[in-house]
Image 1 (cartoon, rainbow, N blue to C red):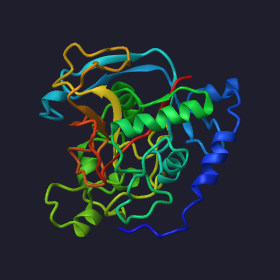
Image 2 (image 1 turned 120 degrees about the vertical axis):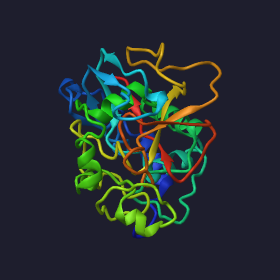
Image 3 (image 1 turned 90 degrees about the vertical axis):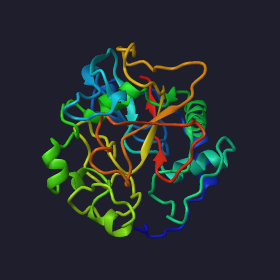
Length: 294
């Protein structure tokens, strides 16, 4: 898949407008769950996620991955906001123009409308710090439990759109996610693992927001790009926090990416699936979205 090439947005103008934009206080009505807001005209759109509880992880009926176990209840006591889509190249390039982020290669895919990739965990945190300084608001990577809670969006099936038979055997997956499907199989015949039995039209990363959102109003939570989260990787959830906070350490061998990418089939695009990566890992399958405290 090649996205149509469009003229690059003048990133220095974008950075300047973002730096000069006033971060007006959010009206009370805007913090209601499901509401969408922006802290400045070029900031990412943020969706308010309601407080609540959910069962994090998977049982052996769903998956044999040991690091998704034990399945356990997590309670998030406060609303938070999560970006409606993955952070885009246009947004990233504004940070580069402000000299707070390093350039990210698009590997010839184009930039306009596409989610930024080839960024590592430290890069994502640098973007969050820049946006926080620019707006006066607290942006950050979501914790792993916040991410899974938002991806499930009140559902209990492996994919928020339904059970396994809907994922592997129908066109439903391609309505909601850019994952490894018939399009990807044709574009990359060397990827021989199981694919979704439908056609989404994208053999690689696609423009953000192109697919239907999940019940919380978030796009591309499963598919398109894997997404960095805050936590360190552990081999399982024994002794994991149950309050939505990050499971972090001063020294961390691996970080975590979530959500699956355009290259991932059914088993690795589940809401519970987690994958460890070095914090310095940059790849065309990995991007991020941001959380914001309210």
